[in-house]
Image (cartoon, rainbow, N blue to C red; front, side, top):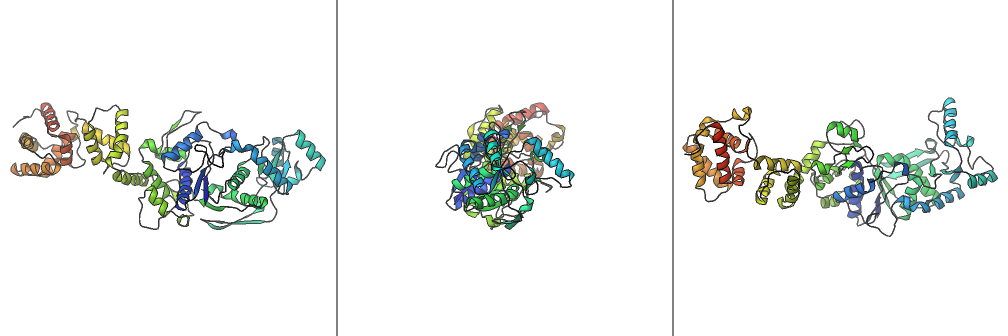
Length: 507
């Protein structure tokens, strides 16, 4: 089994493209097959500098590895179609010899004139096809001598000769049998006047030469498949198996998910941040938003594929074992950003704190936050990852508890304080001083005994303590936070509070 992912370097990689690459990867690894990365850059007018590098970096970050490609080489090199240009002309001319294609000499002005003439005759959206080709300048309408003279002297294209009154049927691994009638299809250009192939010719030739057995691609390529099937027939090659993936839809289901939609709704559509080389516009990626590659890949896999088991959280290895084309839906899949966050949160919880520490430390230092001991940061990460969905939320959590509360407190927090509790805190500090085993469990026992001795309800004591120690009215276990802060830091924070609010600092 040989599969390929063949993006065009016309800009950043959309998450729909990541999903296509992922499904190819999963099937290739599951069946011990081969996965090829091929850059389809035949349309040089749309080439964007840096796009190829972006695609490779994004897929590498996602953990999608290839067996061959422009970045690693392989027996089918080169892997950029622009570097394979010399291959394609011979195949286009072979089709002409076999009667499956023809030379066309029409200029842009003549093509536009044809469209206007047939529109005036009542034909909506006229195409270069069986109806219009008899009126155009091509090797089917011109004398052979003139054709040869024009080939030597003029630019020309090679067009596919679409058969008349033929039904093209093929089996799609997701959609079942699909049929198109050739009366709906036009004579596509296969070889352009500059000698560069179009997508259709290069795609089929390269898939054949590289031994591709399965073509898994987006639904938008389904209308092109009849031509590709006919090309395989014309070349007398065995065609691969086709599978066309459902569209990724907006959260409301109202159309294909676009960058504009994502911008309006406040979430990314690209795996990594992309800076447009022409406009300078920056689009933040999932990585920079704080997603783990494991979390993003897990969520993307579920957009159109339904696992056989009652399970939503998968590692890449688990996805490899569970994935199947048979369970990919025909219907479009709505993108749900909150669900993506939830999936990422599950992966954050599973990840060892030691693995998260370097990433959090790097973000901490980038933001120029106050120095923090590694042990304390690890403890805060361990506490935060139970609540955080994204990496920046872990950083913010750690920052909020590492930094001392700003005094005086906001009025809303002041209103939650219990004067009765504050009055007895010096005695609590005295009790804390005598703790030998400074752990959350022991802190909880001491705090409960103190509250009982002072006849204070924990429902009053805990909120007040939390506010004066952290400057927040809610959060994770107060006992665990006190363990992380340590006795000396608790005393410093109490003294800062007492100084501002004019209460006794000692017993």
